Image 1 (cartoon, rainbow, N blue to C red):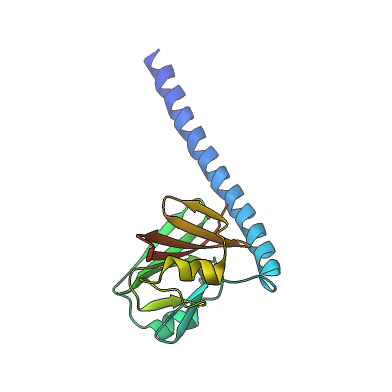
Image 2: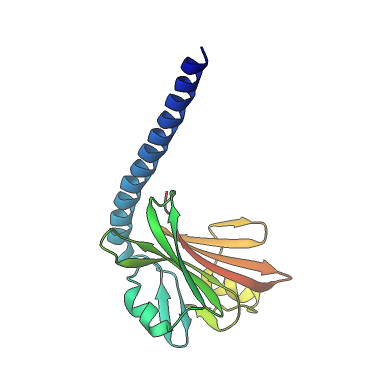
Length: 178
C-alpha cells in the first residue's frame, strides 16, 4: 500500500512539472506572437524611453549598443521569467536598473527600466523630482492609476510614474509579457 501511495505521489509531482513546463512554453509562444504584433504596432505608436548621459534606452529595442554605451554595470545576473517565457538579464547601474529579454540566439531586447534618481529623464523631460502637474501636462490623463502610480500604456509598453506629495519619486518602463 505504501509503495502505491509513493508511486501516486511521484506521478503527481511529475505531472505537475510537465504541466508547468507546458504552461511556460504556451506563454513563450503567446509572448512571441505578442512581440511580433507589438513590433508591427510600434511603427506608429508612442514608444517610452529614458535618456542617461546621452544614451537613449527605449523599450523593445536591441540592447547591445545601449549596454556598450552605458559602460560597466555595478552588477549583472541572469534570471528566468516564466511570465515572459524567456531568460532575462538584470543590469544594475548607479541610477537605474535595466532588464532585457534574452533570445535563444543570445541577443537581448530592452524590457524594463527602473529609475532611482534625477540622472535620467523620459523622452518628455520627466525626471525624479518633476511636478505631477508637468507629467499631466505632457502626458495627459493616465491610462490608469494605482496607489500613487500614474500608468500610461502604448501598445505593449507601460510608463509608470510614481508620485508622492505631487512630485515624481519613481519612474518605470515596462513591456507587457502576457
